[in-house]
Image 1 (tube, rainbow, N blue to C red):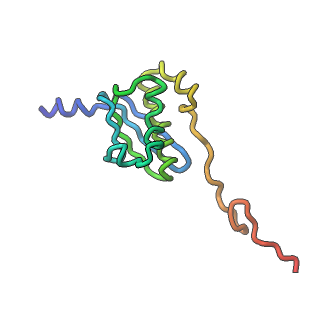
Image 2: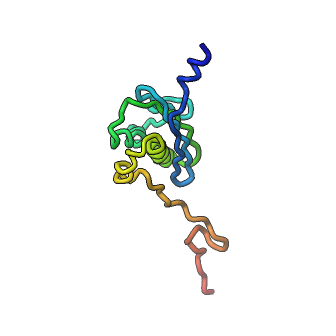
Image 3: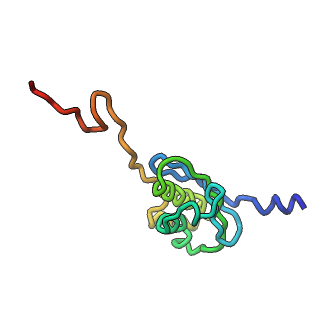
Length: 137
């Protein structure tokens, strides 16, 4: 009995997605389309439907809705950043499972890591680029 239960949770593939300071580990499993993020259902984790839809966009592009279950662990950043990190990780997991998906996902722009991050604050300044107010006298 224990061996059968272990076989249910075998990961077909996994991918790591990143966006800003968010990191998402995505595990692809056989199933019927259930998405679990940090132990909660996707609708509970991403209350906004737009962010929830962002996560499963690679399924729409590859036409694989309802074929796989997802188990996602995500940390860091904000909600929107986490959703995009999940999307990037799912794309990488799908390509790791089947290389034929690479072209469609790359065309949609899901395989590229978005490199934009917050610029660091510099010393002697109020922010990354904002200076302190200059006084001539």
